[in-house]
Length: 199
Ligand SMILES: Nc1nc2c(c(=O)[nH]1)N[C@H]1C(S)=C(S)[C@@H](COP(=O)(O)O)O[C@H]1N2
Ligand SMILES: [Mo]
Image (tube, rainbow, N blue to C red):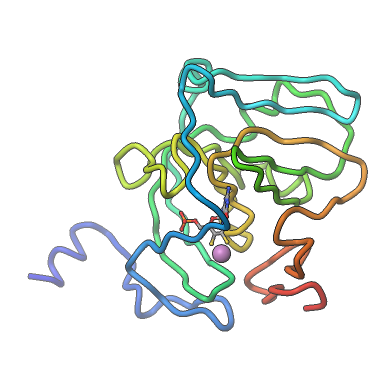
């Protein structure tokens, strides 16, 4: 029965998937965050991109929801060593949002409600690699997991996927975010095991 269901759903067998070095598989969805869960009223919600020129682009909640949506299925890898496979999300690709943005900056500093920040190269947010996600597993994204909306950038350690995302600042230079300034790696590629600053 189990085998039939698994085949029917077309799932990969998780036991047979190669994980990044030092990671273990979990079926839970742990909640990890540095502070309390902020509550963000949707009528005040904005996602704001600030370019290096000072120019700004902003989307309200209804404007975000009106954009074309994608449903990525991705593996996620937390630096505390849990990995979760084939997670299913719904959201708007950063490519869609950045189609309107004029910038020649190379780096992004992602901001969240509550003050969390994380940095990454702008290129890692583009080309189908990142989303503003508001759905998880067929439901609205729960506040504990970053709802109403979080960044999803699954090819880097999951600390880069800022929960309760509020915007992105674009810079010519890489500026460390919250964990990056506390000794975590500036880039955070799980396949190269870039956990800490000097890895
Ligand atoms: N705003 C905010 N986003 C955050 C964090 C945080 O503390 N604050 N923690 C990060 C870390 S370390 C991880 S592993 C993931 C955890 O996401 P989850 O709680 O949905 O599993 O969120 C990331 N995004
Ligand atoms: Mo994490």
